[in-house]
Amino acid sequence: MEPGSQVTIERFQPAIIQIATQAGTGTGFYLKEYDLIITNDHVVGNNAEVTIAGKTFDKRISRVFYTDRKHDLAFLEPPGDIGLPELTLGRYETLKDGDAVIAIGHPYGLNYTATQGMISKVDRIRDGLKFIQIDAAINPGNSGGPLVNARGEIIGVNTFIIRGGDNLGFALPVSYLLEALNLYVPNRGFPSTRCYSCGFLVLPDNIDSGKYCPSCGTEVVIPAVPEKEIEPVGVAKTIEDILKSLGKDIKLAREGSNNWSVKEGSARIRITYNPENYFIAGDAYLCQLPVEPARIKALYHFLLKENYKLNGLVLSCVKQNIVLSSIIYDLDITKESGTAVLHHLFRKADEYDDYLKQEYGCVERLEE
Image: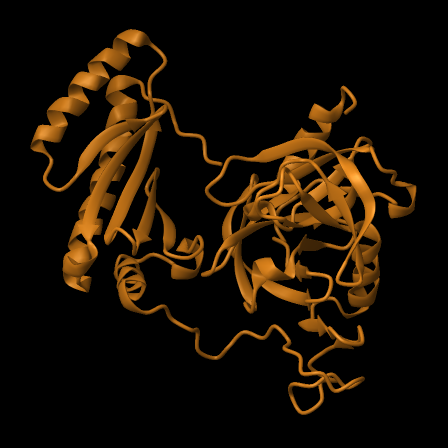
């Protein structure tokens, strides 16, 4: 990879978009020329709306404009009030085996990732389509992120990996992306889906009998927002009911299956339910350790003393972060009891975050 690759990566970061649904998380990237966010169809699933966030903007809801099951592509509504950098698309025809590449992604819950590698095979055929086979390490949460060449051009969309394979990843070539963009852009702003069988663009005004492709009769689904949202069940529903009662926006809080993240003042609280061990964990990420060693020692003494006083909460240090945590057994949780526990966690998290910065010089935590 050329020496300027670090500059290329930094230029891409503001255009890399985090995407979350009730089922999972993934990555997307913004193309200014088309004013669309590009990702994989399997990242958005059957959702007509998803949650997006980026380096320069907070979480918000985004409409799904286009889905394409055959090519595993989806286009999303971008944030309209944020200036994002312009990225350049490359040409698939110029690629060669052995070319250097960078796979870029930014899934929820993980640090920003950019991994270098090379093209193992330019035209690996799978399911009747060409894919770019790469050896750059990617993970499932990076699905939908861009594959970039040494000149900083997008040459593909990271699409899937082979589990158990040694860095065996595949990206959809940019040529397929351009074909889909040219098909959709004249109808930009309308929900649509590309027929899996014949490639026809199905829109609300041409769909046959509300569910069939007018060209070939294949059953298709246009991403339309349902009149009533499908709610989770069991413990997950109880958690969401609690968050609603505490004034949190559930759609924005969701970060995949059984994971939620909310802000309370300056603190970020992550709530995780693991059905396998029966516990709901609430972890409030506060500020980070102070720079001065003397203050760190004083801070440790304070945290230890506070833990003797706290009822149902624990202060700890995770790497550089100070974390306030609470655990609830899933069989014990009700809306009333859970609301009391989380309200207490939220209130104390905001209080401690402000106090630790003021009294011990703790540093503002950097958000991913």
